[in-house]
Image (cartoon, rainbow, N blue to C red):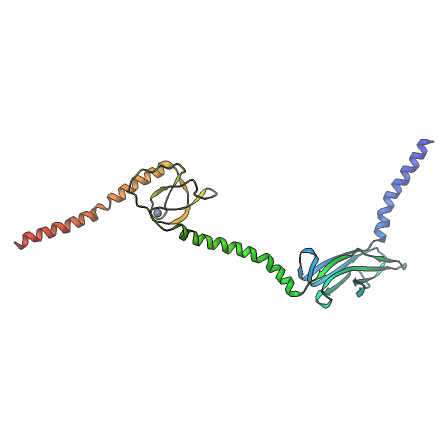
Length: 251
Ligand SMILES: [Zn+2]
């Protein structure tokens, strides 16, 4: 007896589970809103051209579209849509919904949505509100990168060619003057590249940290290029010699 009763209850439950969604589907009117042109911002603020879209049961014959208590139009064939322009209605918060009439005379009310109709200028202003801080950030970064070298100065250091440096925090080779220099602990880096200023020529740039043997080789290269400048010095000596020679010629 108990088993029969349980079976009956289960059968009833199973029946309900299959019937309920069908009933629900039959009886609901689902309204959605689309933005066709204009502004749909945060907090339900809208401005521009929007459309109601209503889905309902198969026997849905007619749909009426409402903004608050005012019927703004109706549609008598699927798809049940209606386009409207927010500027044609009072500014402020409105309740948007639809009423559906079925062939057998039932009236179904859709879900409702609250939207605040804002003036056209405000729609644009809200977009600017988002863009302005973004531009400020970009231009700020650009200005800072231009001003920072000026603030930190363009003072250069003179160091005899070939002087061995200590590269405790690594070092780089200046792409402009080819002289090696040590990074400081505070040298900012961008991924694997350092943002550094060459102390010899004052150039700012992204510099690849160089291995120690390359840094040492650059110190040597400094010496060689410095020695390469000796002919210029001997030019001066030649001139001196020529001057000295002229003294003898004058005698
Ligand atoms: Zn340099």
